[in-house]
Amino acid sequence: PFGQGRIMEISWWQVLQFVGPFGVLVAVIIYLLAKDRPTGMARESSKHQIEFEQLILDRVKNLEKENIDLRARISLLELENHTLLHNIAMLESATQELPLPVWLKDKQGTLLAINRECEETFFRPLGLTAADVIGKKDEDFWKEELVRQFAEDDELVMRTGRAINVVEKVQMKGGRMEDWRMIKYPRMVGGTIVGVAGIAIPEEKHGQKITYARRSTDS
Image (cartoon, rainbow, N blue to C red; front, side):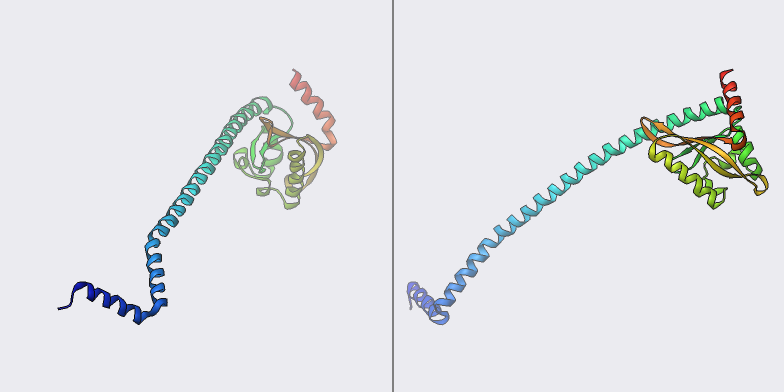
């Protein structure tokens, strides 16, 4: 019978003769790579986890900033709404009997309020009441060329933040066009322009009407 040591000696020698030195070297390299692979995969997995956690942290920070901005915008809107309600109440109480058309618009050109004279002068001839026009825009009831003229003047007021005194054409009953002097000025909330307000005066009678308006206000 052969001894165990002799069998092992013959086996390794036979293997060496069969694969040669290069084969042994390849086998050692494969063994070392296989041994190190789990560690390398663990390092790669850890790296991806760190990157993912950082991505989450960055997103959370961005959401916190967006939340702060959103809260600020909500506060501004609440202030604007409060101021708007106050302005509408003031308009209704102070200008309903004023013999001049007066109106309020937001930045998008939506009508927020009109007084009785504005309703009777500009909208009753079109078969419309205040309830019909509040919440709507000029393009809902005026011709395209008039809408463009109104929008250009409103935009000028909001861009410059200053009042303007201009003459605009207005369509009256039967399609007749009249010149009206428009005094338009910016509506402000907390130093921010939130829309336009306007007063209309017939061009051929504006001096007389302004005098009457002042007497009515002073009395």
